[in-house]
Amino acid sequence: MVESVVIVDESGEPNPYLLGVYAPVQDEITADELTVIGRIPADLNGVYLRNGPNARFPMKGRYHWFDGDGMVHAVHFENGRARYRNRWVRTRAFEAESAAGRSLWTGVMENPKDNPFGNARGLPFKDTANTDVIFHRGRVLASWYLCGTPYGLDPLSLETLGADTLLDTLNGDFMAHPKVDERTGELFWFDYGPRPPYLRYGVVGPGGTVEHCVELDLPGARLPHDMAITRNHAILMDLPLYQDLDAARQGRYKLTFNRELPSRFGVIPRRGQAHEIRWFEAKPCYIYHVVNAWEEDDAIVMDVCRVSRPAPAGNGSPLSRMISYLKLDARMYRYRFDLRTGSTSEGYVDADHNTEFPSIDARSTGYPTRYAYNVSVADAATNLFDGLVRYDNVTGAKETYFYGPGRYGSEAPFAPRDGSTGEDDGYLVSFVTDEREGRSEVQILDASRISDGPLARVLLPQRVPLGFHATWVRSEQLR
Image (cartoon, rainbow, N blue to C red; front, side):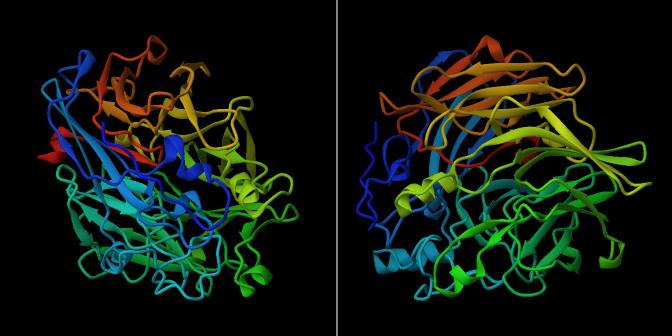
């Protein structure tokens, strides 16, 4: 088992996001002979990749969980065997700090005035490409949560192929969660910035170039994180959570949640112009992640993980307030936007269970889906994913699987079996880390019966720190 190293920040307090199951690892390894408990299904062929933050050097100021350099961990399944590897995402900032041998950037909670450079749209923070991994046109794109440069990765070797400029047609940044329509080969994205235009929306065609881009008017700078698509539309967000401008002028990062403002959802034709967008209003909230959206009669249905109280609770030290900001508290929620009347209806799908980091059958993004697979968020001070939840849109049933005491998982994408004919005809795959033993494994579950527990557990030679988003790349996509 490869040991982790101790990385610290300058807060003077133990930072939980640098310790235990979050502690970074420094070694890039490749392992072909892995111990398997149970049996890897022979019809599970493809690669599971998960991105996440992994600090390399002692931090200047307070370390925020979003500050760590991107590191992708992957397990390739082929003919009942598994291979593991992990690699840094070699961003422009990563290479600059490698040359210096130390941190050059402060984190998102500190004054950024001396940072060497930021992103294309004027955010002065370090673009780490540590947030999501999206497969499009033969490569994986690593993204950053505040909009940054998409970095191409080879899905098998994890070699960083460099900044992806979309054949020199990308002028700006990508948000964290672009949407890919596998049926058309298109990729949909937005970016935003602190100065007008506050929001831009674009479409990458199947040939890999930006074929459509429009500027959209917002009342001011916002912090949207995700979007949705349907067969004919894209849905963008104007949510009442934004950076406090007075604090920003003083070099401090502070978010304001304005309950006097509604949440607004902009529905625009996939390749529509700015004047064609229609705004639908709803109760104030914040949304990190969309489950899926689709068209139904003359309406759009959109399922999300909705946060009703995104501002931190209570006071305390700067570090404790930062940890409070990070804590996820979301519920499965459904919107229905009536395209005839312009009205919005909304309500909970599951008002009781804190679930997030949703996944669906990626082949059906933007089209009606029956199942959603979310992580269960543990009742803890930090973000710990203690199990999985399967939602059935048809019956309303909810099925759960929990990893057990002291064991925490990752986002678990749906992995279709070879010849799969349905959105639960396959598996869920997740990294699981045991905080007591300091060990990690990959668990494989039958997506149609997750409560039965893992079909196989693949033991790993290195602990995988808890992280962010994952994807599954099918074997035919690798070809």
